[in-house]
Amino acid sequence: MKNGFSLVELSIVLVILGLLTGGILAGKSLIRASELRSVSTDVQRYITATQAFRDKYFYIPGDLPNATSFWGTLGGNSSDNYSYTCGLAPTTISQPLTCNGDGDGSTLYIVGTTGYVYERFRFWQHLANSGLIEGQYAGCNSTVCGLAVSGLTAGINVPAAKMGNSAFFHAAQYNGTGATSCCGGFAGTTSIFALDTGKNMLLLTRTASPAAPDTLPLRPEEAWNIDLKMDDGLPGTGKVASNKGDTTNNPCTTMAGVAAGADSGAAYNLPDSNRDCLLFFLRAF
Image 1 (cartoon, helix red, strand yellow):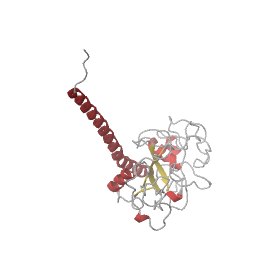
Image 2 (tube, rainbow, N blue to C red; image 1 turned 45 degrees about the vertical axis):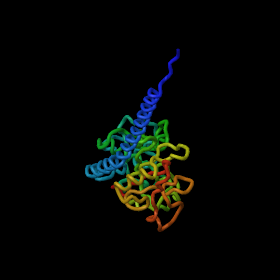
Image 3 (cartoon, helix red, strand yellow; image 1 turned 90 degrees about the vertical axis):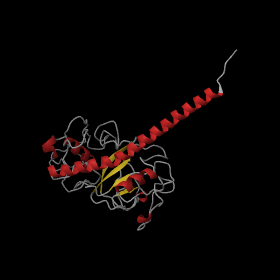
Image 4 (cartoon, one colour; image 1 turned 135 degrees about the horizontal axis):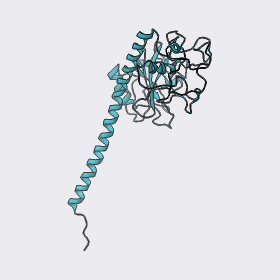
């Protein structure tokens, strides 16, 4: 005689499966909530570290014109350490050697060069060398430094954020009219508000380029939540802002394309469940 499961036994199994599924989903939600809370904590930590660096060395990280006096010369053009060529020789990140900045108060351009330079990456290297943040960083676009990675690479030339495929980036001034590579892997002026950044800002952005959707770190609701806690909850105004997006490319907000003078009317596209948002932390220091 074969015995099967009774209805009571099957019910118990279904209840247990339901509890396990609910626990897994609740656990994922708690992990994600922790990741989101870490954003504001990390931003404040980097701002505080930068202010401490400036108090000690009288320049912001990356811009320090005598950095090699403290940590040694990395290589390249040793007679002009803040030039575009400094540090282009293959290297590793297991040493504090570095290059100087040009001391102009920002990490936008180096005097006498025609392209982007590595003060934006030296920013993290100088901070780490000073002991004000943990880790060691390559100080430039990783491939150009001779490392087998490119662009923004968490733990190599920028610090990782808690969520996957994302990191913090130090970007220079951006006013909505140019410098399309300002934004750590997110290019395109039509997808960015005309932001009043001041000279320096932090950016929570991606470190890889996965297929759409979910190409950026945050869902609109998550970006709104962080923005509201730290600022005004609006993506185009205040000290915390986001990418504008359009109807087909990262629709983070309700305002598609360029709408000069109307950025204050934008809102986060809360029904969008994809990760279509990055965050700018403007005039950070």
